[in-house]
Length: 426
Image (cartoon, rainbow, N blue to C red; front, side, top):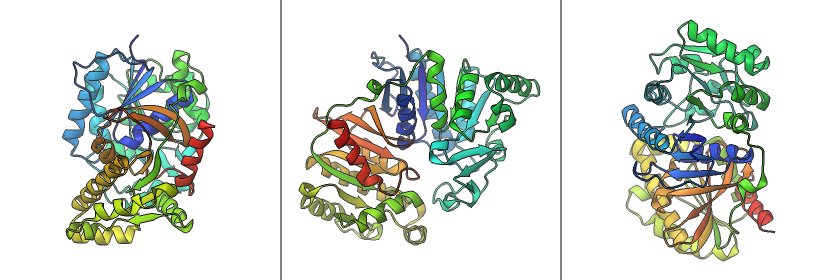
């Protein structure tokens, strides 16, 4: 049987975020790291496949090219519906990449209409009258306005998306959504007749996402954050099942690698440091000066691995990040941190770490590539949008890993994640 739902995610943590929501409502999910060769059409023991790309902040043409390759592979596997997943804070620049990728996927699929909603109420992301809120704050007033790569200074998604695409972007507002799937479908028909091809959809609750999920049954393409995933599996008759999230029992040492500069991750690092647990700070300026910071981090970690999780982090305040970027350049600083933390993660796994938390989308992408991970089986949810996963390492061992979006998770995430594995193993 072909894949019911084929998903294309624009970063690695976003991919696991999406896969987690699908597993919660009963789908067995495999996440692939990058696009397999087109000729690689092995049978998939999964109802949905999520292809994790690193395309959020690359040039738009590059994002389009890799997304179309992902689409070609999914279609070769018999995918019935395609899901383009982006961040719940609609991370993008005026040039894309959400709009250009959406257009390219629509063209390739012959789709004359699709929806767009980054809403994820479980994580405080809601859309009301086309405006995106982070908690009770407009996106444009949130910490995302200071993001070093994709600063979000406009909360009006119709405006943001309209600037990225030649297609007309309309709105399906909360009054329509509240009336149910039939009302949403009627609004889609009306928008089509008026020449609109994309509609931003309001959603302030999970019930709104369930209504929208039913309404988009049969659309070749949907675009969204991970929230809409809870409304799609029922279209194929899936129901929540604990079996869908089962992973092998965990073992080995525990560690955390954090490269995110988000407000949420800063809180998590601060709470971890206040607990007195072992932590090593990576200074990009020392790395740039040629110091063997990776070696220092691994020597520190090796002396503490027997005592519990060890944190290696480069997470800093927005002011500190701007200072480093001013010295090294924004792109250069980001790539330097990613490479450094990926090498640290490699060294940790070589030293017996088999339970690994990675914080930050770009950091997660660098780490899984450095470890040679090609696929993940999605397991139980730690916090909304963040699951544990199991990966086969090149030597055949199993690594339990979670790839956390910088914006997700409660203040105690770094410790509660391991507590969940203990509960599952009990």
